[in-house]
Length: 85
Image 1 (tube, rainbow, N blue to C red):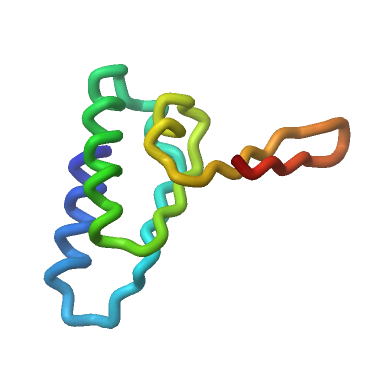
Image 2 (image 1 turned 45 degrees about the vertical axis):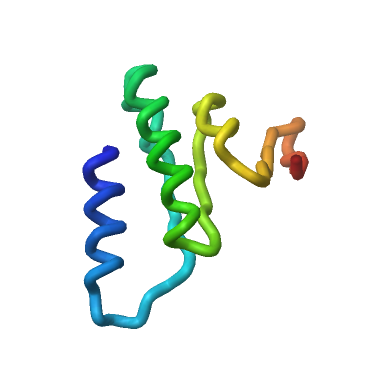
């Protein structure tokens, strides 16, 4: 998982195509062991210098400690509740 993220950033850096300033990660952290999650969090901090916006969808609470803004979505009966932290 970490290797694929690094590869995406490397390809983004060397590509001559128009570049987006948004980086999106949808899940993936659940497959990592605790030490790998810590390494990935260090990598996520370094991504801030490459992208203006990084959008992460995750259920892993440790990853939330690295983030600047958290949008927490919880199910309430048939609806969803959104809380921005």
